[in-house]
Length: 351
Image 1 (cartoon, one colour):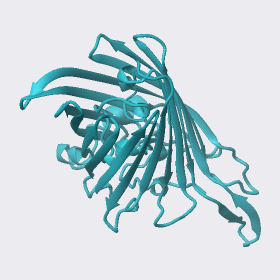
Image 2 (image 1 turned 90 degrees about the vertical axis):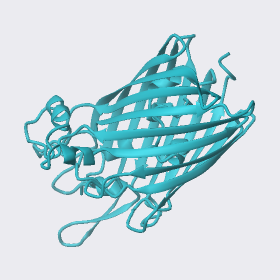
Image 3 (image 1 turned 45 degrees about the horizontal axis):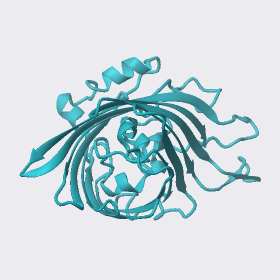
Image 4 (image 1 turned 60 degrees about the vertical axis):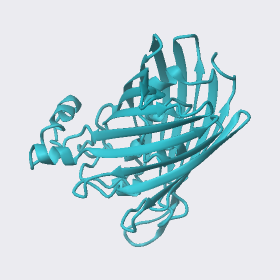
């Protein structure tokens, strides 16, 4: 049994292996409709743009996130993640993160209907990240990712174990202080290319290989310092899968990435339809209280991910709790999705 992309709610015309990798687990970015490539960095930055860790405000931090996934359809599908980082010196920051996608419990039976026990399909990834700043405004980041997918149920004919592979991310971040509309501001740009790795097959008995969900995100954000205690961030991102619309059996990963920009049957106009857009806003008071909102748009010909989102955050001492809510339409499998993140700042501010 192969659990395809629809299990993640990320329904798309471009099918890939392990699509859970592109699910953003942290509640802050989710509350801004998955906008976060260029927003100010925090402990969960590795999921959106690892380079931002170079300018994170604390020396060390740890975060735990939890999502009851597709809760309108099942009560035992969930995503749990943990991320953390530690500043090594003035330039380098090291980070690590893990993400687990649990698909509940499945009852198995053979061709004659005889029970074969139960199966707990799931997928897992673990990252090691490094970020380096160059001066006060530019940083680069990279992540190495281990991926394990156990979504093929064993049978009497096959005892295939989980699929394992590796992938890499690369990212960049630039920020510059400025004055906009009479307010002191910080303008930032970000880029994140994720899940660059080999194609994988779900069983050893098949020659069919699937592309990993390589993805490009570009973003811009501007933070206005509206008062000594308040600041307001506006951000916008675009994203596109770097996989071919119609993969060829022997097509390489590099060829697939380049062809993803020009292989849509409808030409350039259809290529544009493969780009998703998101915009978000965040208001922060004294870096202790946060209000957030956003909107995500995907062309109807390419998927169902169109929704508004909202959320809030509260910091108390060294802890911060964030929650987000996705308010999609009834046709959207992700409608009413909640995300929760608890962050802990371990070693105080970097300065």
